[in-house]
Every structure is written in structure tokens, then in C-alpha cells.
Length: 118
Image (cartoon, rainbow, N blue to C red; front, side):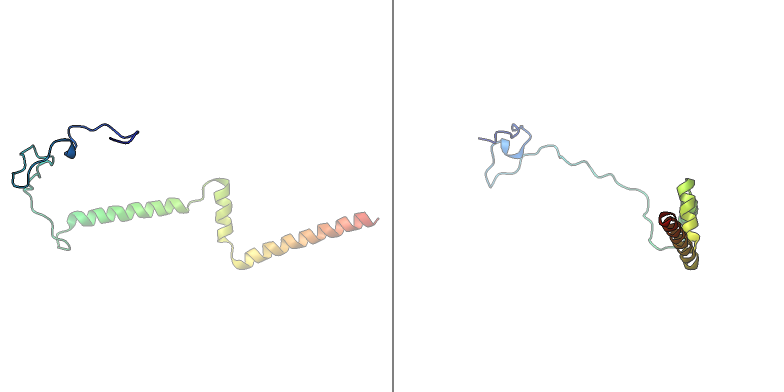
């Protein structure tokens, strides 16, 4: 008995074959695991000197990181240039721009009132 949507049992499933008694030895089948290859070379000591190869790799990684940082800081297109300009403004520069905008708005409101009054 099985589930309606279950898969059919294969011969390779562990419980599809009859079992064995407790005292009997397991049957010899081919090992499902691959043999572990032997490594003939020596390992590297962590933190040891003689890291000429490692220092070159570190320097290359540092150069690549610096280049990425430079490219990330460059403005891209019209919006990027505008964003860079806004980032470069100081607090006083930002306040002055807001003040100028507010004055222009008030002047526009006053001129609208004068036109509507007459």
C-alpha cells in the first residue's frame, strides 16, 4: 500500500529486499562511496613565513578593491552628477538654497495677491 501520488519502489531502495537475521554477516556489495584519493604533497602551515605567493595575492586584491572604490565614487550620468553636487554641499549651503526657494515662493505669492486685488 502506498500513497496515491507516491513513487514506485525501486530495487535500489534499502527496504525493497528481504532482510537478514541478526547473526548473519551483511552482504558484500560494491561500496556506494568513492575511494578517497591520497594526497602526496605537504600541507601549508597557517601563519608561517614564506608567504610570497600570499602577499602577491593580497596586493592584487587590495588594488582591485581600490579600483572598485574609485569607480563607485565616480558620478554616472545626469542624476549621478546631481547627487554628487548635493553630497558636496555643506549644511550652510543647503540652508541658503532652502532660504532662496522660500523667498521666491513668498515673492510669487505676493505678486499673485497683487494681481488678484486689482
